[in-house]
Length: 333
Image (cartoon, rainbow, N blue to C red; front, side, top):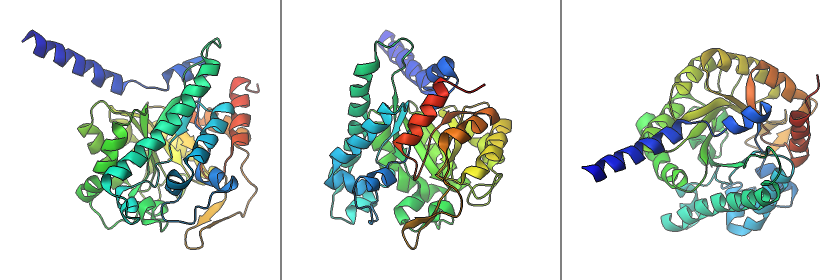
């Protein structure tokens, strides 16, 4: 019985840790945690060819050292969090390339290992700096729409119900939850049904922690047309969800979205929008109709609105994160 009691206490301790915010030390130190910028478009800028249904996951197969270089650049620029190259790394996607489940799981774990090794190398240079906090690695869980590679992560018009989404996500979710990453980044979620699937998967992995971020069509509604405030309240109530927010969304929607989330939940608000350009899924390229976002210029607006975890998504760069980091360390009056 004593041994059983010790096991129960240990399990309770692990569960309690899963419910604690990994962002608290960063926010306590300077009020903000900084997420890295784009991975895929930065890989393209460094010569990778991503015209492929696997997108950035293709680089895991062909040039993993390039992924390491991008993580290194973001940590050197001041990022507190690296997001892994697993957004579009799925068992189904790899199977189409003739890669079996065991090898696919190895590739997902490789992506996490690359990010952790980059983080650990950076930390060796920072551990003795007064006030330094060890950076985090977030394992990217891309939406079902990313696997479809047809832009549906910006529509949410899935043909699957909640149980089917859980069945589809479960194998990768398990691999990433057990990969050694500090938390999961459930990103670019276009609809409430997928968010509910993630929360049920978290229930099945009680020591895991995650943020859930959404793609949005306006300052009040996510891509599916559902109310962001309502879904933020639902997601924010889950004990293992450590932050709620928005990513890969037009920056001009972000202040209103932050305010909607802030009114709905006490969880930290995370935002990492794209550069303001629009991705044309059918053509496979980005179009710009407005001036490109200057991340550091917008960040103080997002911070004032209530976001405490800020970074960049598609088309943002290490230079953007460096400017954001400089602002966060020396905010203007």
